[in-house]
Length: 466
Image (cartoon, rainbow, N blue to C red):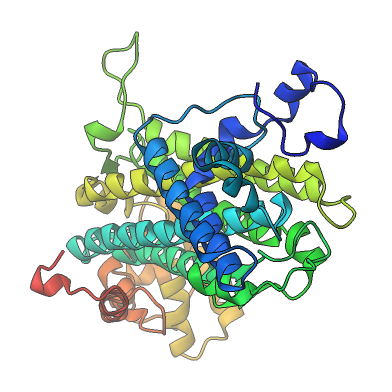
C-alpha cells in the first residue's frame, strides 16, 4: 500500500471503499505526458529561482524522463491505492531518486497541477481535431468538385422545394466545418494560459516565476488570479460546447446520408467498408456509421450538460467535484475525433447517383418560384404572382402535369401576363443557372465557392493535388 502524500494529518489507513470511490487514476493516467512535462518545467523553475539546487533540479528532471519511458514501455505499475496520476508519478519519482523527489511539490498544489495538465492535454487535442476537420473539409471539397454539375432537389420541411447543385449542398457543410475550425482555433488563446503557481488557492510564499514555467510549456500567458486559476473549468466547457456543435453538424449530415442511401431516395450508396449487414436479412446494408454518429451526438451533448451541472453550485476555489470533469472530457475527445475521422472516410468513398437525383427533380413543381419571379419581371406584384402560380400548381396537379407540360393557354388562365418565354424560366437547368445572387446555387457562384475553399485549404483540385 502506497504512502499517502497527505497522510501526516491522518491516523490509520484509508478505507478501501473510500480509495476505490475517490481514485481517478484509472482514467486520468492518460495525462501522464502532460503531468511529467509540467513537473519538469516546475523543477527547472525551482532550480532557476534557487529554491532547489541545480543538481537537484537535474536529478528530478532525469527521474521524470525515466518514468515517462517506463510508462510508454508499459513497465509502470499503476498502484490503485494512489489517487491520481500526480501521486503516481511523484511516488515513483521518490522511489527512484529518494528524498530529492519529495522536493518536486515545493510551491505547487495538485490543484494548479491538474489544471495545467488538462490545459496541456486540450491544446494538443484541439490541434489534432483542427487537423482532422481540415481532412474532412478536403474530403467534402473533393466530392463537391467531382460532382459540381449534378443537380438535386433542395428541400425545406423535407418537401422538394427548389433545384440546387449537389456541390452547393456539400459546401453548406463546409461552411459549418469552417466555423468549427474557427471556434477551436480561437479557443487556443484561452487554453494557453498557465495556472501553475496558483498553489492550492492563494499563491505561495516562495519566490516562484510562473512566466518561466509557462514559457517552458509554450504558453504565452499566466493566470491573473490564483482562486480562478485552480477553480476555472471554462476551457473545458468551451471545448465541450464546440465539440457538441461539431457533432450536431456531423449528425445533420449523417441523417441526410441515411435518407439518401435508402431505397426511397437512392441518391448515394454508402461504401461497404463503412456499413454493416443484418444477422437475419441477407439483402440489408445498414448505415451504421452515420447512425452511430447521429446517436453519439446526444452522448456528447449530455457530457456538456453534465459538466455544467457539476460546476453550477461550486464555491471557490477547488472542490473534489472537479474530478468529475475528466471522464466526460476524455470521452468527448475520443467520440468527436472518431466521428470526424469516420465521416471523412465515408465522404472519401461515397458513391453519388446523379440519375436518381435527376429523377427526383420530376414532381414537386420545383420551378414554381421561378414562375413567380418571371411574372414579377412582367410587372406583376410578387404577392399577386405568388397567388397566380399557386392556382396554376393546383390546376397542374389535377391534370397530372408538371408546370412545363402545361400549354401557354392553360397558364394564361391563371397568369394572364405570361408569354411564351415563361417556359425558359421553368427549365430546371435554367432555374439553377439564374440564381447568381451572392452565395447562390448558380454554377459560377458554386465554382467561386469551390475555389475559395481550395484557397483556404491551400489546395488546388484542378492541379490534382488531392
